[in-house]
Image (tube, rainbow, N blue to C red; front, side, top):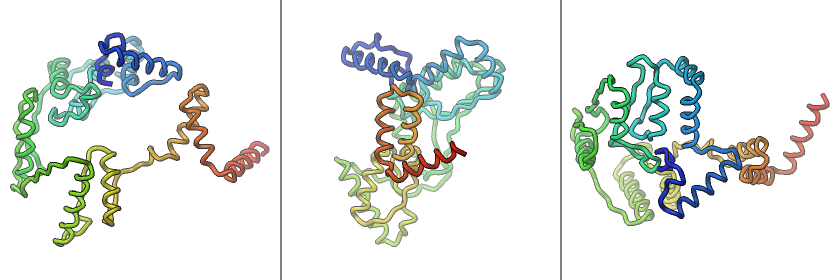
Amino acid sequence: LHAKARGGRAEGVADEALRFVWDKYDAWQRERNGLDMVDLVRVAAEVVRTVPAARGQLRQRHSHILVDEFQDTNPLQMALLALLAPAEPGRVTAVGDDDQCIYAFQGAQGAAALRAFLAAFPRAERVTLEQNYRSSGTLVAAAAAVAACNRRRCAKRAFTSNGAGEKVQLVECTSVRGETEHVVRTVRSLVAAGSPLASIAILYRKQRCGAEMQAALLAASVPFNTRRSNFWRSRHVQGVVGLLAFLLRPHDDAAFVAAIEVLHETPPSSRASASTSASASTSA
């Protein structure tokens, strides 16, 4: 993904094993007429670049463009933005913080992306937002000290007018189990000290961490509510999507397997009822 997002191709990869996997992956995509997330941007940029009518229509439709989290953009996305940008100056706005770049594995450039934007739009005005309105002074100072270790970051000085707040606690855990046990102990100690459960929040970056944390809380009989929605990733929705994909692409092995799984999990009575309803509707 990192190489593809930067416009690379399989033949340009030095590692023989990686080049072999990449070739097989490309062949697998072509057989299924499929595109991955990077391809969606690449193909869109190619269409906009080579079809003037499409470029003109899109520019006319979108008179202004706002790109959020710009530090997580890659060269392909930057190329697409440059192609879609209206000819009039002042119509493109990018908002980003290179200290929060988390998609380098997908080709995100961080501070380089912000500099690329200023190079592509030399008349752009740069506005640095340094004041933090949400966090305590101690937390802002700690975060700024960590970010300052990045020598390639854009220069800025984070500050806040809020109070100092509580001290930051640094806990080093050697395993996932150790981390979840520490969180459970902390929750229990806060509750014992009088804090209601509703006032305690556990934040995590990866969904995998959330599953392990929930399992630890369940094992410790600590009640909790999760705010994460799983609708689009639920098995039923994925099954319906797989069935529709199979109807659209009968030669797609993955879609075929998904369709079989949906039919296998659907009770015979439900299938019969659906078939009867369909027959009745056709007859009517």
